[in-house]
Image (cartoon, rainbow, N blue to C red):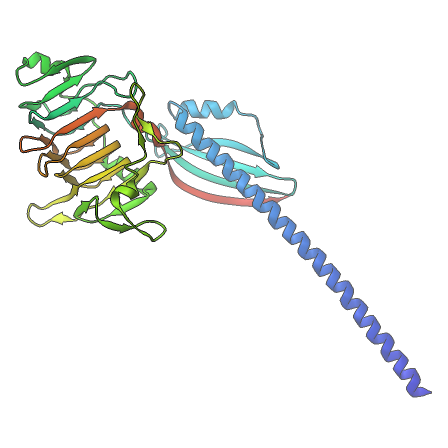
Length: 382
C-alpha cells in the first residue's frame, strides 16, 4: 500500500512539474512575441524617422538656401503622417557654417515605439557658369573648335568662357555666348571676343571642396593613370564590362527641338578619378581615351583628353584639362566644365574636333545637398 501511495505522489509531482513547465513555456512564448512586436514597432519607427530625414534632404535640395529651408520646415504639419506612423522634423543652427549647414532631427513614431535620428546637411549648390570655367588661363586653338555658351537645354545663356584670369588666349575657333548666335572667330575684334567671354571673374569657386564633398557619393572610383573606353573593368555586380557601358553612354536622349535629357529611369553616375603623379612632369594626371557617358565626373588632378570623348553632365577638375586633336576622333561635351589652377587648353589643330556646349539642365540630375554626419539618438518606448 505504501508503494502504491508513493507512486501516486510521484505522478502528481511529475504532473505538477509538467504543468509548471507548460505555463513557463507559454509565458516565454508570450514574452518573446511581445519582444518581437516591440522590435518590429521599433524598426518601423526607425524607418519612418529616416523617411523624415530624406524628406528634409529633398526639401533642402529644392530650397534656395538654408534659411529658406528652415522656414519651409516650420510650415510643415507637426507631426507629418507617414505610413503606419508619423514623423516630426526640427532644425538647429550649425555653428561651424550656419549659412550652408543645418542640423536636422527627425522623430519617427508608431503605436508602440519612437526613434530619433539626426543628421547634418550641407547645401552646396552647383553653379551655372557656362560651358567652360577656369581659375587660370584658357587657351583655344583650332578651326575645328566650337565653344557655345548659349543654353542648349533652356534659356540661361552664359559666356562661352568664364575665367578668373586676366586674359583669354584665343587664337582661332568659334565662340558663342551671352545670347550672341553669330560666331566669334580669330577674325573678329577684341571687343567681339569680350562680348561672349568673361575675364577677371569674381566667381572664384573652391573646386577641391566640391571634389571632397561629392566623391563620397561616387558610384565608381579609379586611381588609374590611363582610362580607355574599351578597357574591361568589373561592374558593381562583379561582371566584366567596359567603361562606356558602365558610365551609360547610350542612355542620353536627343530629339530635334527638345532639351537633351537622360533616358527614362536612367540614373547619372558620379565618377571619382584620383590619378597618380606623373613622374615625367610631377603632375597628378589621367589620360582619357575613347570614353563616353553621362554624370558627374570628378578629377582630383588634371586630365589629358586626347582620344574620342563624349560626355553629358558636369566635369570638375582641381588641376587642368587638355582637349587635343590627337587620335582623330571628336570630343563632345554637353553640360559644364570647371577647372582649377592649371587652366584649360583646347587644341584641335592636329586632327579631330572639339565641341563644348552649355546645358543648364545637366546639373539638375545631381543633388546640391551632402550629408556630413548621421546618428541615432535614442529609442523611447510608449
